[in-house]
Amino acid sequence: MRPAPECLYDNGPRPRHIAQVMLLIHRSRRASEAVRKVSPGGELFVASVVVCMLLASFGDALDPALFGEAGLEFALFDFSGELSLLSMRHWNLLQLLLAGAAVSAGLAVLRVFAAAFFKTPTPAPRRPVDKVPIEL
Amino acid sequence: MDIDFTSGAFWSALLAIVLIDLVLAGDNALIIGLVARNLPKNTQRKVIMWGTFGAIAVRAVMAILVVYILAVPGFMLAGGLALIWIARKLLTPDPERDAGHAVASAPAATFAGAVRTIVVADAVMGIDNVLGIGGAAQGSVVLIVFGLIISVPIIVWGSHLVIRLVDRFPSVILLGGTVLAWTAYTMIVREPLLVAWFEAHPAGKPLVAILVFAISLAPWYTERLPEASKPLVALLPGILAWMLCIEVAGSYLRVQIDYLLTSETGGYALEAIRWLGWLPLAALYLWVRERIALSARRAARS
Image (tube, rainbow over all chains, first blue to last red; front, side):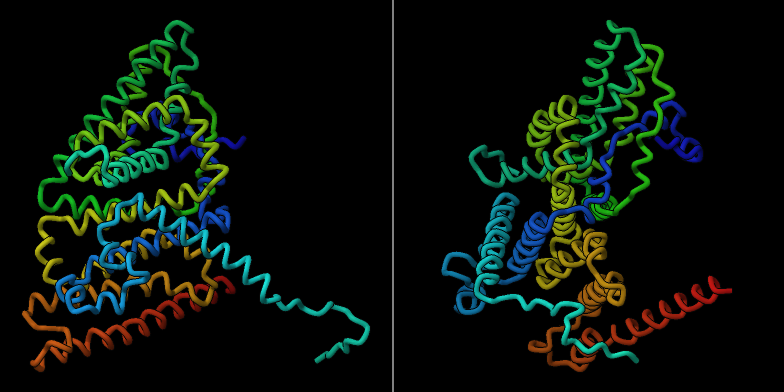
């Protein structure tokens, strides 16, 4: 267990005993480095939520009178008749999280199926018999 | 915000409050146990009870105050900007934070001292948390009270569970940062001083949203960028801020900057500046960055 740097106690106007108690707060190393330790699945989910939030903000910028009535909204932004950027403007956090989960699950399934249909090229063995090393 | 217990908006605001509470205050309550640990057993129980009560009371009062303060014009924008900084700080990797495991050399010796330490430490450390839940509550005191009722027991009696949860799933921290960024965006666009401007300039909303996410989540995507693409971390928010400034300039100069609608030379000029004007600035930034890196390398070599 490392001793805390002494300078930390002297920073700020807090009394010494509070500073020491605050230093005791347990923070998990993985949590403090969440951006490095996050799993690919979790990252995909949060990224999908961010994309949904950005789409909702785009929907907020569209003028329903202009796009909705002219039919442009259906032509340009309506994904499946029900789900559109214009309706996303009213989505709350719960809906955005569910949409993010659905998108990330869809992408994960797509990745599995894509891997089944399209074989990933594998590199040749590093030192095969018939491989001629080229030295410069 | 109208309170309708069956509405999705109510439950999602409550979810945002609980999530912000968990990621920003998950470990505050450990203070209580640490402060009280050297006191006699019968005093310990009293310190834990009164310390928890005091911390909850102070936090509730602060959160309710924040709701009223945010109603003052200008404070919603300031709160949104502060939340961007909080989200960025939450996501920035900090291995040194582990120094928090250091020795407990000064537990409180008296009952009053222990309670005071708990309450003051919780108040000092809970400012970011209170601001976050104040923004997520959208002006509803009932929501804040509900959020506290749900999250405080989790934090006080289940802090180890929360820590284990974020340890097992670090994406919870990422999600918390995202929710903070979303709350910051909604606070900025709900700012009473800016509502009319956003109504007149709808393009401003997605620009602000991308800008907020680009700044708040920068520590996350910086980790994934290759070294050559690192300047994007500054360039992307810079270009978005440029676009936003042109929108603001258009409203101040009273020039129509949409090239489909403009009929004046000023409008076309502003449109050209909007799409091309950032290029020399970006080139200048890259050049200066390269020069600084070069001189640093030279200094290290010499």
